[in-house]
Structure formats: structure tokens, C-alpha cells
Image (cartoon, rainbow, N blue to C red; front, side):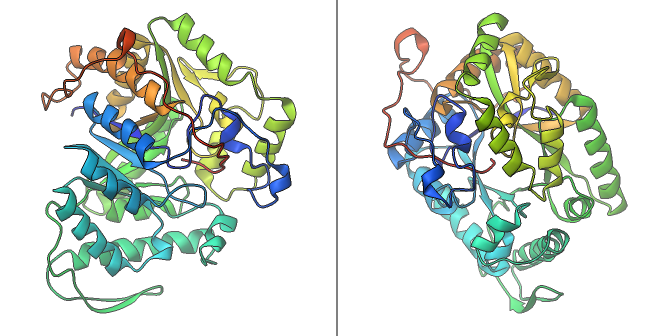
Length: 401
């Protein structure tokens, strides 16, 4: 089992600090409470294309694109970026509750033809009722997962190439059909830490994603999902979502992590923790429990830093250390059964180079990467690192990725 490396497209904006990630202390509704942040890069297509091209050049297999109120639409953005890249895949996040499953299956089939087979799907059931209601979805937490279960059964059913009928609580489909099914079928990624999420993963998905918890906790999740899948007669693969701060020395990496906290005053952290504490997501609550809102002891496991989660939802931990140390931690997770690593860092353009030029060769030397296509050749910028990308108008965002 080889390691699959993926990067992230910040379609809600990018920057050098964590402050802009949760400048919306009240969900962005009352604009008078927005704290201006300088140096935030707008998610225009030119900047996102820079990141996508860098990820492709550096040998990443795919890039994850988020979904939600505070980012650009993932389907439209990534299909545009397929025209600016050659082989990079796009892990498109979407919410099953706000789109017809038959239409989603058709969109995926069209996408595969346009991109020549470069689509992966990330199903986001949703753990925030306020966010769901913005899209007209009023189901409770567990019922959303039950609906996702039906949704994925229908998607796979209509990909079969012949009329498909389905009668469920949430969907009734008669003769559902994708006239020309996608080839290849997109792999389906999915995450969820609640009791309601586990059976959905076991029955329907190809890759179960967890956020970056300490290795022993990740192992417990893997054992849980693997056991449920075995009862369904299926095999599920596993992935993890992490930030990275990798440098030529451990000291430099930890200094960079420390600088990310420089702009975080106690009021900003407290406001973010209060907002995140209202989330229905079990995974989000597990992220919050790793640090308890305190700056003390943020290294919760060797080279695993919980500082990001002080002010942002979703993935709240980062691998911090020298290139060899970060590779050590990836190897450790891999030994537990983690195959897919969905990574990111602030800013995403520069951090892609730090990881791609520093950690990826370490992993290759250890025999953890497939002998697939080598990173695309290119002319490096000064010192082998990219120049800072042009900034855009300040864009302040909230929400997890």
C-alpha cells in the first residue's frame, strides 16, 4: 500500500495568518464584527491556477476543494482548472442534501469526460445546522446521514448504465439513469465521526477520511470503520486531513508555527471557540477537545500541533517539524492503514513547495510512493521557492475545510 499525497485549493481565500480563517466571529452575518486583515489573497482563478499547477508540478495526485457559504463553488471552479492542468485530479466536496442524486451522478459523468477521468468526490453531510439551513436543508444531524446513505446508493445505482428504481424515506427515484456512466467511476471520499456516520461509510464509500487526531485515536477510528465494512462484505480505504509546516530544520518549523499564533489575542480565540463549540459535528468536538481552547501544550503528539484549531473549524492540526520528522509521522500513520494524505498549509502556494520539495523526496526514498509519473519539470524560482503570490482584496472567511 503506497501513500497518496493530495493538496488543498483555498477557494475561500488564502493568507499568511490564521486570523482571517475565523475573522467572522458570528458566522459572518453581522458585518460590523468583521476584523480587517491585510495580506489576504482573493481566490481568483489565476491564483488558484498557480496552486493547482504547483501541486501538479510537485507530484501531488489531487487537490481537495471545499464546499460551503464562504468559498467558491467547487464543481465550477475545478472544472475550469482542469483546463489549466494536465493530470492533476480534483477532489470535489459537495453536500448531498442540496442536489438531486441523479443529477449529481450525471454531473460526475460529464466531469469525467471533460477532465478525462480526473474527478474524485468528497461527500460532506454537514455538521452545522445553521450552515445547512442557508441552503434550505432543515434535517437534523442523524437524519442527514440517513439521507446521505440513500443518496450514495442512488448515485452508484444510476452509474450502472440501466434504469434504476429506489424507494426510501428521503428519495424516490423511478428509472434513474446516467445514459453514459463515468469511466472510470470516481472514488468516493467521506468523513464523519458520529455513530450515524460509521454505517454510511461502511456501506457506500471508497475512502474514509478522518481529521488529524493522534495516531492512537486514528487507529481506533480505522478499527471501527474496518469492522463495520467487514460486516457489509466490503473493504474501505483510509485517509487523513492535516496541515503541514515542514522546514529544513525542526527549529525553523516550530518558529513558523509560533508566528501563526502571533496575531491571535485571547478575545479572538475565545470567540472562535464559542462559535465552534456550537457545532453538531462529533469530529469538530473531537478537534476542540485536543487543545481545550488553551495555548498550553499544543503539541498533542510528537510533531502534531493543534494550534490551527484554536481559531478555525474542520482540520485543526498540523504536522510540524523537519522534512524527515514530518515524513516520520506520515510513515507512522501509514503503518496504521492510512493511505491518503490530504494536506494544506498557509499560504497554500508556498507550503506546497516546502512539502513537495522537502518531504516528498523523503517519502520516495523510503519506498512509500508509487513509481508513477515524476513531478513535472519546471524552472524554479529564486532559491527553489516561489515568489509570494500577488495579494487580492481582503476576503475574510469562516468555516472548516
